[in-house]
Image (cartoon, rainbow, N blue to C red; front, side, top):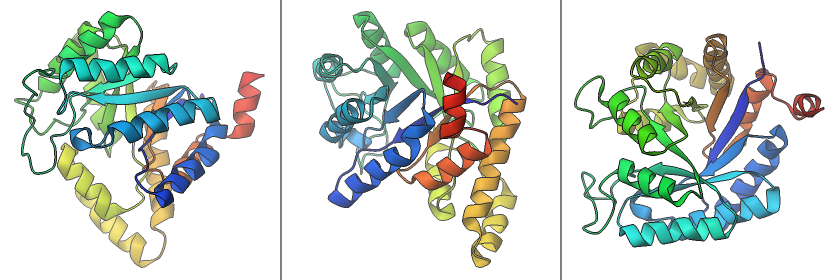
Length: 288
């Protein structure tokens, strides 16, 4: 089976300890030669400055291609595009354009009166600058706000037509979830790459909370599997095996790219990549 192209998501540190964790994550994962890494943007734009600092530092110190997350939340159009221009000035040409989560305490997304109404408008504005490769989010399981089963496919098509080059999906637990979504997108005329997002499960309780928030369906058997594995002290072994099996199933169906949500905890992601044949030695052979 071919070795996949990989990419990693990190989040910006908000404390000294978190900074050390991010740099440790980069030390562990950068040798795997990711196609790019992305840095998230906190709910309500709360990490705007931290995201900018992390993106520029990673690019400068690690020589990696970095994609900065950018959202529509709590900012005018001019402010959002000013942030984008500051990335371009720093040599960053990749952006993950998202609507973004509402600020804490605000039940649903409400556009800024002078801001972008949604991610489609943001993508179009970024594409119009001609300065960025724009990636967007996608939902293999229905987004919590989706009107019907095909709403996420229609919405993704609009974002691609607005100028997005590729999509990265929310995480999911079974390969069939992604494959059904990929087939529906192809049937709708979406030709842009759709990269599956993979979450190696560092903590099952946290993963379950993330899933509830983003609408990812949790197979019933996973609760018991993690309860048993945790009791027996082998939760990490189970998490590595499940993520590897999921990736293997995707690769067998022609998937070529995998995007890992690292949560700035690199060991499980590294172990899964190694199991898939993505190792520093393997990447050197590939380059040679």
